[in-house]
Length: 426
Image (cartoon, rainbow, N blue to C red):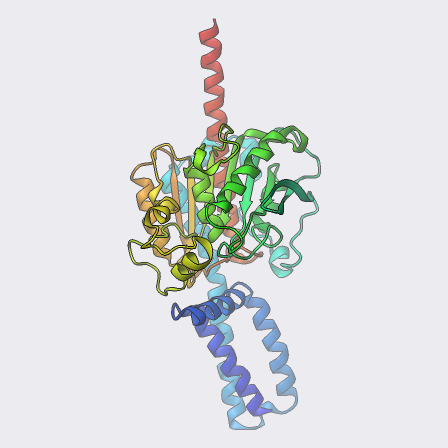
């Protein structure tokens, strides 16, 4: 039993090391490192508890009777201490999000949000959700699943709508775009903590499916999402949403597409058959996204992303279609009329380098007239917000404040416009 305890200690030690020092290359190793680091890091307390049960069983059967077992026991305790430490490092997300908001929106940004919006904000995490992260639900939210919005190229595209069970009217709309490298993923498993959080506070949220590569070739993905936005606006009264206020959000490839949604409003090239429709959005929340497909700053640590783009998504090399890659890169599409944007990225992301976010934010801040909030979350891996964890809860609380501020600013501007119109009419 002593050697089994030693094996457990070695595995635990390696998993802990991987959380602190993920591998960035080569590609397959980076993917494995991400997956294990993500699960162990965001579920560290559950992981320690499971290991403790196994270790107790081994000790009960005599694992400490030999010296190697005693050493393994000390090693396990050290690994557990480090795992718990890195888990509670997630509390830093609260400070980082608040600082980012204050720096960009002003130290008094909270006071400029109406009390009826501000009173729905939370400051502390929901430990019940953290302790029991699955399934992701909220008793105050109803889900209308698999709503058909478009048929194209033989594919039926659907979306899910989340709203408060009281079914309020004229609610702000949040559109969630899933990631998955443009080739996998669905509306069923990403963005759910944020979706339920906002829907329980009076927003209408839509999680949208779109065509995936290699069946789809860019910009098919973006066209589908713009079509979904148009469909939602056309059915606004049916689902109680305000068609004039829409925010898009997504992670990874979903953040790439959400950024393009925010930066290519009403571009007829991406609206075939509905060129005259309004596809503008009033804000965007972008999580650990890819913003420069050209990779002009050489941020990709492996060739895997470029290979995926060339063989599955764009279906052309960058040498053959550089102009297409440029147009598909949000960093190339920044402009002064961009809506307010909140960019969030983990500093330990081993799939999409954090430098992608840094360069994109710098480019957008250089031209945009609206707020560009940037929060770089310490210790966060890719996809850290997929299920409730300490870090996820604090990040979502910060996102909710950004969304509340953005909506409040929109309401003020609309009210001022209506007053000006009334004065002009007199």
